[in-house]
Picture 1 (tube, rainbow, N blue to C red):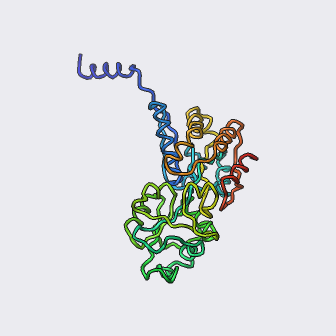
Picture 2: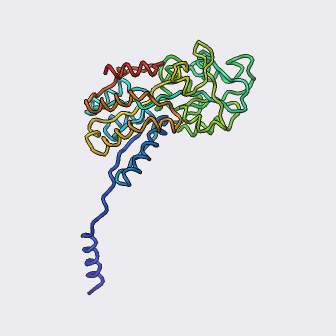
Picture 3: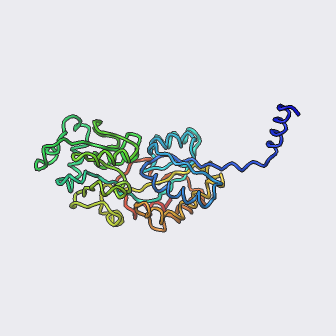
Length: 328
């Protein structure tokens, strides 16, 4: 038998060998704020499926996630704000119908370096003074925000333009989504922002509560005065509605077409059933049990669309969210 004949014989035998089944893949992208929750759920789900299903979770930001989602490129989009009108139109144009599922509450957290011993609390007006477009190149020192504060450079770190956190923060603080000065270090990766603030005594930044809790040895949270005195971010202040205006619901959006795939349906149901424990594990605020059961009910009844009407909203409390979901 020649070498070539032998090679062809072996190749033929291999071709008839039973091949291991290829793992099914669920593709998720979007918010870096929602990422810790979805990643925790994905890990538990993959363990339960023993390698039969692979779940990939990206962090291109809420806006970046919706772009992919509305083009039909991913199954699920993580979002730290509700879907907006232009994104609804983009989805409609591609024939993408979707389920909107709130999964947790976040306390969007303003943070400073631990060596900062002056900015223990800030008013919404002071934050606006720092972040509004008119501040660019002008409000550059701490004492310009409050005269008693040091004459030291103000180094700013914040979410990038594709981030839902950027949209929500600017809407809540400046009064218009995406309205912001541009001379700051921006990133959709919250770990970049963590390092930036942790390494600079004069830095100030903002991101989701879970990233603060995970790094609280090298960061300090600022209490926010929304008009009724300073309130620190915490699970309690989110639940009782006093941490305003920076408390917000966070979501996953699931394509109706993707949900027709058994593995996606199973994953989403697993997500809603296990979210209460896993949300707390990654240090966000779990919704009341009723919210998750409503989500499962909406899936079963095929209730597609959004309860937010495509508008950017600030100050939606947990009770308000539950009422909307119940009426949907």
